[in-house]
Image (spheres, rainbow, N blue to C red):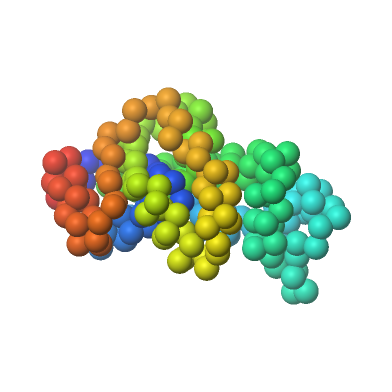
Length: 202
């Protein structure tokens, strides 16, 4: 592996295959980080819980043990644009700060960050890090089918979720590479391996 200290952002639409790409990269020995996992950890933070209560004062979004009911929260924000934006204003800066902190602590190595909602945090990142974007994409019919199977939802529900997340392509920074994931996992692995070779990372 080439220890050239490069930073990569892996992004793409929901069910496009970002996590699969990250797993392939991780198996190659690179350090990978998921913004979803960062958010999950943030939701366990006491300050974050209190802040969320202020945004959703009348909603029953906490379980009996005090943990956040992420499924309930997701249902609310997918149907309420105003409160979704309020939640994003709270969460996104904290996620970016965690990413920046991770990069600063790293040594001479390449890091990969999976950020599904990259376009919504791009302005902060552009002013903070030097990085390249890898965009993972697939045909819409394949995306809908994968999302339905993964979450066991109807076509109508899947279309609604994709519509909410459809801003991800609006980049200011041009992606270094678009990896199309319309085929098998073996085909995806070949594409990722080719990318790593062409960038002199392996």
